[in-house]
Length: 262
Image 1 (tube, rainbow, N blue to C red):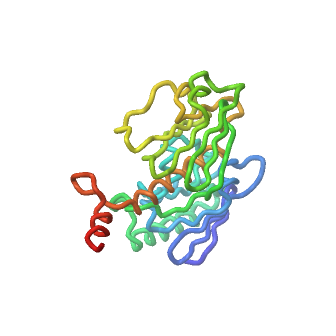
Image 2 (cartoon, rainbow, N blue to C red):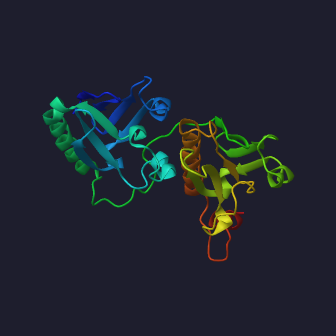
Image 3 (cartoon, one colour):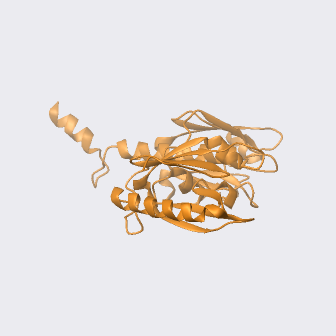
């Protein structure tokens, strides 16, 4: 398409195979979106388009992310406030006809790229997230991610006795299955790392779990903690995709091939 559509919160540029989104800065705009800065969203990563009325004389054009395509949305799990949604474009109501035109064009491009509402979940992440290194301060410790390992360094002013006894923690992404991010804007906000051998069961109280940092007033803010969580989600998938397949006995097939060749 090659066109540009500018809204009050973002600017969308329609490229041949993706929509390039630049988020506007300003006191009224989401800090999360300002942290993201720019995103390239392939049409293949989208499931559809919505157009509807917004607040105070606006219309909202929203692209619908395809399940499994965006590690940021995977980590957020529907907890983002409307203003922080990276797939919304807010336009003046008088531009509704123009928005309808682009909605139709975008829907056509999504279908041609293999996305759309009938598409299967994406086989891999298709949208990039902010890369490592990243870090933020939680209430009870500092979380950092260097691209390979997530580290928690406890604060004596906030960490529980259980965490102090456990000591500072280091988690290679190869040993993780994902993250459980609970927004700091909700009661009980935290970032919990999920080990591969946890069988889907979470540990107990986040205050005492050494695989969890807890948020609090001014700690673990969305624009600080969610990008790190998303970066970990993306790294976990990359590690899983490069991990050798295991046979039924638990041995690496790659290792067996090496043994045979020796």
